[in-house]
Length: 473
Image 1 (cartoon, rainbow, N blue to C red):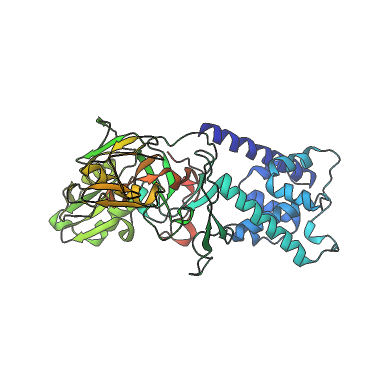
Image 2 (tube, rainbow, N blue to C red):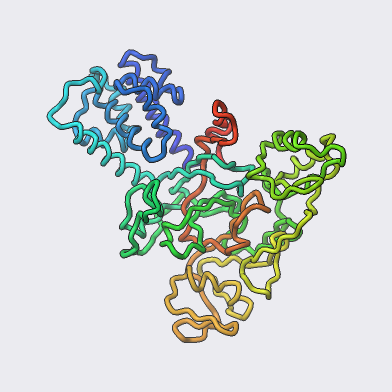
């Protein structure tokens, strides 16, 4: 993580240094290149593009093309007309911008948008920009970074609904493409439609490039939802959770407390549980409900599980629960809920009557582990054996495992597995519900939040400024 952040900082520093000198050559103060968002305004001014392009930079997908076109126009403003030069501007601005900025022979020639039309048509200009944008974005998305937005509150308060973050592909190593017949920069559907964006006629073997590290316990990881068997591995829905158990661990939850290899684990700083907030009989009102929810930045739609005559259930971390108990209209705050949930949990067998708060013990397989296939283990590892290990002819009957028609008493696992859980533990669909995450389903490591938008706030204050560029712990 530290190495990756250093690399990102160095590349960003080089790009900003180049912009600093290019701005100076264009008659603008160099420091303006270092101010986020304001530098884009000056940039558009220097290339002669309309100010409304600033808004387009916040539109997913379209922003990739706009930003690429801005790179091309900026170097055109310094006389760079060649196809190769435009490619350098998009793919390696940390090299090309300083090269232009610090070369005394390079001069700012004016706004690229005002230059006399060259032989190539406008259509060709846009076509080239789009091609470069697609190629650059595809390569970056595959090998380096991918943007991701938080859709549910399962990781509160570490990550909030509306957080936009970057996910690193290089920490754990990027995966080689598996599904190659796919519309670029899409996932399962073509944008704004229900039309599939891929054909699964060709499925390549998947390999992982070398990474900086393996998954460590408590890393926040983006992965493909394993149980979504209708899609190829690389096109399953992206989930984000915390890796509370890694391959080789024995995991157990006792009365909400996590144990790894028999050792009690501290709660993450922002872990949340469902608490029953009971009001004093004469203080039950919508105003007091709103006051409490506002204090902890909660919304009824996202965080209140059930409403009752004298209170409600809401997800809070232990510190927030203690604060809520001190409010003058609150009678009690308790983990004892006025209802009981009985979800169906992995491994989906009555022989293991586990609950979300009392789960396990369960061993998380490691690549190369030789595990005895007794009746219990056949049940525990049935899903990986049938779906994730690449076995073509697997049969499980009467607590026995058969591979290619032969009874197997021991099995050697081919890859590492992980146990994922959300920090909002009572409101998280995670490994307790669908089992292990195989290594070949791991997308990358969550790095930092680059934008955060709260749709429930007034329009003038939707951006959570205090969350921008926060690293993810």
